[in-house]
Amino acid sequence: MLAEMREAFGASETGIAAVVAEPIRSNCHVPPDGLWAEVRDLCNRHGALLIFDEIPSGLGKTGRFFAFEHVGAIPDAVVLGKALGGGVLPIAAVIADARLDIAPELDLGHYTHEKNPLTTRAALTMIEIVERDGLVGRAVELERRIRSRIAALASEVPAILGVRGCGLLLAIEFDPAAFGMKPGPAFAGHLVSRCFELGLSTTSKGPASIGFSLPMTVTDAELELCFERLERVAAVPPC
Ligand SMILES: Cc1ncc(COP(=O)(O)O)c(C=O)c1O
Image 1 (cartoon, rainbow, N blue to C red):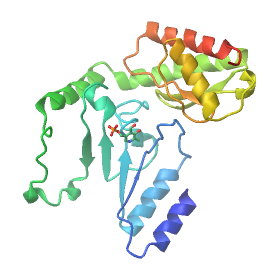
Image 2 (tube, protein in one colour; image 1 turned 60 degrees about the vertical axis):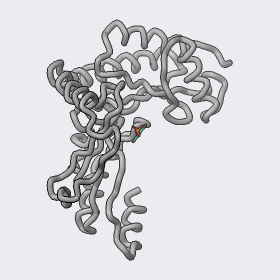
Image 3 (cartoon, rainbow, N blue to C red; image 1 turned 45 degrees about the vertical axis):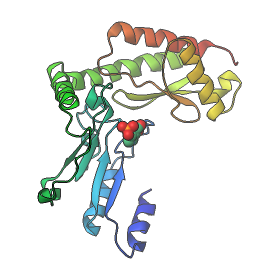
Image 4 (cartoon, rainbow, N blue to C red; image 1 turned 90 degrees about the horizontal axis):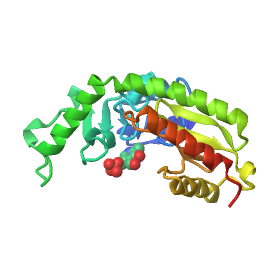
């Protein structure tokens, strides 16, 4: 990816205004060490902005308040959403470096639902709860527990290979051969449907993995229920 980005910066005649990307992918692939520091450097040298989309990964989900705190690069702007409204109310936010506030006199944007006091209050309350209840630390603690539980399961059950991701942005990796299947959308779809039948709502995170991306507020009892159901998914023979 870095080679392609260097090439794109080098080949662009008009210049590149910004790189927009997720610092940690919502498909639970964690970037290699040093990647974002190099991209940051590339952006600095070419006068491009670095904008991180933390809509699925921000606000504590990865075990740090901002996902970019893991990757050694400070963006010029970060975009938040989803959890900002408690996962229920629609609200998103852009936090940007003050030097990007270049046209306050233009007074842009007068949309019907903009500056909505209800969702804005919900977002502020959400952040207060994250801080009050130490939910970022809880994401770290839950990741530790989930990793050790999945490692134990993987040593007992051939269908489960392991877990990848960061904090509570996790995906469980399965071995399709244990189900007599091949990796791909059909296998991932089978896992997702099987989870759904057992009352676990998730999505595919690649050809042989599913999300195990629990909310930071998940209780110990709910987590236990998830493990029990996951074990049943892993134990089921091919459909
Ligand atoms: C990385 C990323 N950015 C942005 C979005 C879009 O969020 P919204 O549905 O609030 O527009 C999503 C939605 O899944 C996402 O995964």
